Image (cartoon, rainbow, N blue to C red; front, side, top):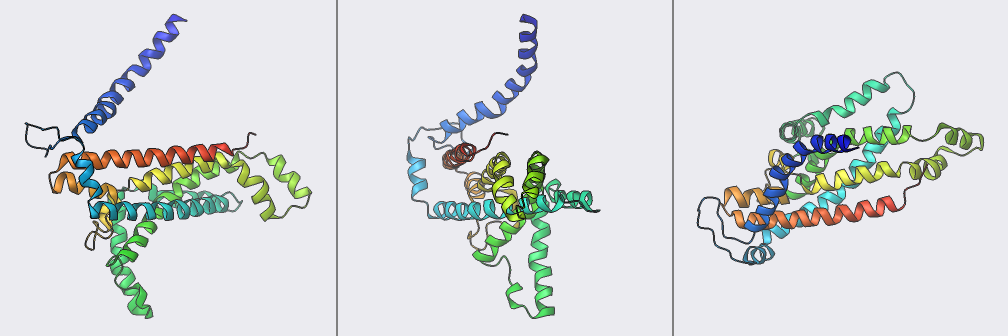
Length: 287
């Protein structure tokens, strides 16, 4: 018994030490720096209390970035999960190209966010304009040049990247449903819509819990795609919270205020994620 405990602590010790030095200690130091006037360079750091937090609540750009990120998160969570679930339903049907399509849909998740952003920037700016010229569709001109098209550009990019990943989770959830239940419903004459509503959706709620958590947290923290696709432009109209924090820290050398913003972002993401997981798990069905 003692040897098994010793082996257990021996295995988790390296992970615990690495986690402590790379996450816990920097996080605690970040909380401290959020109450200082540190600019990232000077060594004589002064404790200024809640001044950084007061400055944030009078920062119009931060409020605008927060609102933009919140609306983006709502749209992304809904659209990505709908597309991911739809793809899972499609590729769990029996047909010849089933495995090929699974690979194709998952592939965008293997490409880095920065590269995806530049690829989609070319598509929105060059390809859309060319299609607009050829077809006379004027609404295809000037993508990423205003807040609305920049917003939907980010949603499309995020959906294209994450939908395939969620598809894999939904496939696992769908394949976990006992076939006897589906067969029994078919014998009873239940329509496809009735099966989806009364059997499939209730039984894959654990999958929804995981997918909603992933999309919620990733949407709030989105940085690299925002940087490469719009860089917050035009005139910071599409600047999200993570990019706002980065600019505060490294563009304006205001590390203390950037740390305060990061703490606020952490609290917001943690609160929404915990509430979502609690509500989602509450209605899960045991099989």
